[in-house]
Length: 103
Ligand SMILES: [Zn+2]
Image (cartoon, rainbow, N blue to C red; front, side, top):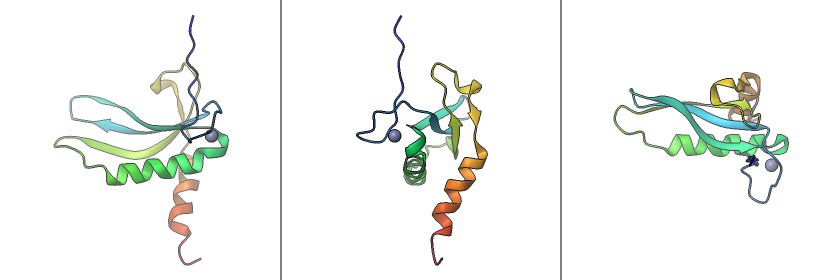
């Protein structure tokens, strides 16, 4: 039996992932979670912001749409729809970005 350990997306970090950063994606026929990265407790912030940057620079094809970046509590071996979304964490990290200016 081989168990795949998903690790944090930060370069040089070898911690197992505790969060999954993903956005809902659809092309009007299929809908799925598009994974932007995985993060350990220490790197959720940078992984989330990197994901938002990538989403912002992505140009969807016709009929394709990508939702907001969401944070999910990651549990190894669980399926996408079983993961718990952490909306409070998303608010935290989003406000960091916009609130930093002029403060
Ligand atoms: Zn990490």
